[in-house]
Length: 360
Image 1 (cartoon, rainbow, N blue to C red):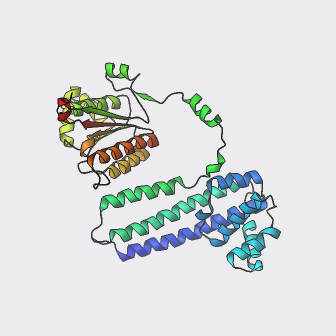
Image 2 (tube, rainbow, N blue to C red):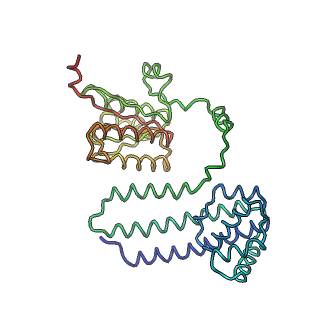
Image 3 (cartoon, rainbow, N blue to C red):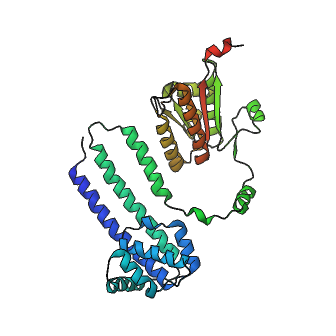
C-alpha cells in the first residue's frame, strides 16, 4: 500500500515547525557567543558544532564569521561582524545589526554557550530525522522497493545523524588519552566460553573486538559448538544474538534444551531457560549488510555483547559479481571491522571444503 499523501503533508508540517525551533536555538547560541566571546568557549563549541548543522543562513554565516574572527585573532564585536555577515547574506547592515541585537537579548545565561551549542545539535538531529522520514516515505511509494536496502540505508543515515560532527583537530598528538584509557581498562573484557580446555588455550576466553571463526569440515559439530558457547556466555549475563542461517529457530531451541539438560515441564528449568539473554534469529537469506544493520541496532537497544553466525558460507554477499573467494574475504573483513566498531565478540562457523583432505 502506497503512503498516504496526507501523511507526507503532516511530515512536511512537522519539519517546518522543527526548523523554526532550530532557528531559535541558533539565535540564542549566537547571542551567547557575542555577549561572552571567550576563545576557550568558542573552541569548545566548534569542537562538536559544524556550520552546516545550522538551519538558518543568517545564523550560519554569523557563526562562521565568529570562528573566522577568532582564528584571525580579531575581537568578536559587532563592528567587525556586521559588515562581514551582511555581505555574506546579501543583507543591509541595518537588518543584520537589528537581528544580532535580538540575538543578544534572547540570551538568558551568558555562561552557557556550549549548552546552547548542544541545543543546536539536537535540533539539527530532529530536522534531519524528519527529512529522513519524508525521504523514506517517498522511497516506499516506489513499486518495487527492496525493503532490506531501505532498512540498511536508514540505519546508516540514522548513525550519521546520531554521531553528528566532531572536530578531528581537537586531539593533540599525544599518548596521554590512550594511556589513561589503558590504565582504566588494561585489557579487553574477557568473556568465558564455558569450555575449560578452550578457555585455557585462549587465556580465559574471547575478548571484545575479536572476530573468531570456528572452521571444520561438514558435519563435525560446528553448529553444536557455537550453540554451546552461546548458551554458556548467556549464563554469565552476556547478551547474545544467534543468527541461524542453516537450521530453523525451533531446531536450535531443541538442541539447546538437549545440551543444557533442561526440561520445559520443570517450572524452574523453564524460568532459567526463558531468562537467558539469548536471542535466536532465523536469518536465512540475509546479506552481510543486513547483519551489520541488525547488530548495530541490537547493540544500541539491548547492549549486545556477542554475535554468533551459523554459518558464514550461507551469508549473501554485497557484490555477487566477484568470485566466491573475494566474497568470503569481503564478508570476513567487514565482520572483523564490525567487532571492533561495536566492541563485541563476533563468532562465525565456517565450513571447509572436503577436497582439502586429499591434498598432500
